[in-house]
Structures are given as structure tokens and as C-alpha cells.
Length: 265
Ligand code: PGA
Image 1 (cartoon, rainbow, N blue to C red):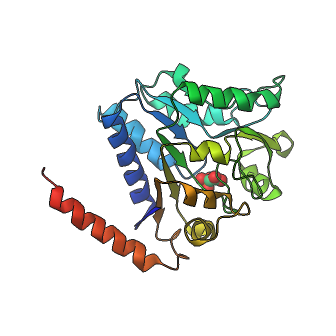
Image 2: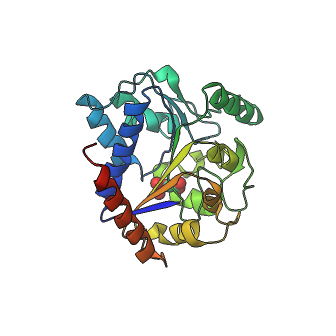
Image 3: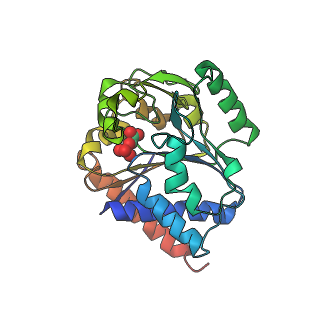
């Protein structure tokens, strides 16, 4: 696990955007796994501006989002589809028919959505880079604590804690769905690379578990310790409970030193 600690949330967004630009520079038709939530917003803003300035193109990109509420229409302002259109897809040159969320609109049997979504990811050739946030309780996607570390895309009942935190986005509390469809942990682990972003003190405990805790379904993000290519991109606040902080900084210095030897080649 590559732990990259930067001095601000802006720096985290800039570094995340840089890594996505680099991937698309090498592979313009990459498949991206995307996340909703507060954390990736500045990175999406940066990518939209990069796209406008011609520094990156999403014209050949396919995307798969992590999760979506059950029972909301795509045009419902509370849906993650609506969020992604507003915050990213409408701002970039992507072909919207290549953007995917595990939609479960009213009338659709939620149990059918997961296998279809898994098949669509497979048919697209798998995810090259999965962007993740992390919940205060260590969830990734909507894989709440006690989720199987071997889970696939499926229906998940949200914890009261997650519902409470996300209720701020719903004017009418009765309109907040209690269940969602989420990529599973095994689905996430299938991605070729993972880029997890976290900022702020409220994520420090989850980040400490993710990087230094034992692998456990009680902190679902710890399953990422089993993945070969994960970058954890965090600010100082989110890093504040890491016990081996000195070591991660030291590794970063060595990486830069090594890289500088090859710069200009
Ligand atoms: P946040 O959500 O980015 O809004 O903090 C992250 C998550 O719950 O996965």
C-alpha cells in the first residue's frame, strides 16, 4: 500500500487528478471506477477544468460508479446518477452512454441489478483505476461493517450511522432510501489499481485501520491490504492517527529521490 500524505485537501485533489490524467494519457479508453460523496468533488472540478483546457479527454472513457440508492429515478436530484451528471459528466467530453451506475429505479427488482452490473464491468474489460472515498466507519462504496470481504455487487442495507450522515442531502427525511446497490468488496479488489482519497480529521480513525489495522469485515476498507496496487492519498488531518507516519514520509522521500534520477529521460 502506497501511503501518500499531502499538506492540504487541495493537494490531494490535485494529485488525484494528475494520476487520472496520467492514466488517460497512456490509455485514452481506460475504464474508471468512480465514487460520489464530498471527498472527490474538488478532484472532479479539477478534471473538468483540465478537460475544458484540452489537457485531458474522456471521449473514449467508460465509467462504473460504486453505488446507487434503491428506488430513485435517474432524474431524482438525490440520486447518485444525478450527482455524477452534475458534478462531472455534464462538465467533460464523455459519451454519457458509456457512464454506468447500478441503477435500481422503481419497479426494478434490486436482486437483478448486481449480476448485470458485474457482467457489464466484465464486458468492458474490467476497471483500470477505481477511485474510492472511505466512510468514518471504514466502509468503501456502501460495503458497511460486517460486509463479506468476498462480496459482489448486491443490495446492502445502510447503517443508521451512514443514514444519519447522508441525511443532510435529503430535504425530506422520509424520502431517504434505506437500501442501496453497491459494488462488492471483491468487485473493488478486481480493479487493476485503486486510488483512495480521504481528507479531514473525521477520517483519521478509518485511515489508521485501513493502513495499520488487521484485515477485518468490521473495517471493510482493510480488505485493500490484500490488493497489490493501492494508493492512499490523504491530507495531514486524515493521517493524524497513523502510528508509522515517519516511515510513510521516509518512503515518499526515497521514491522522489529515485524518480529524480530518471527525470529528463
Ligand atoms: P464523503 O463520503 O466523501 O462524503 O466523506 C465517503 C464515503 O462515505 O464513502
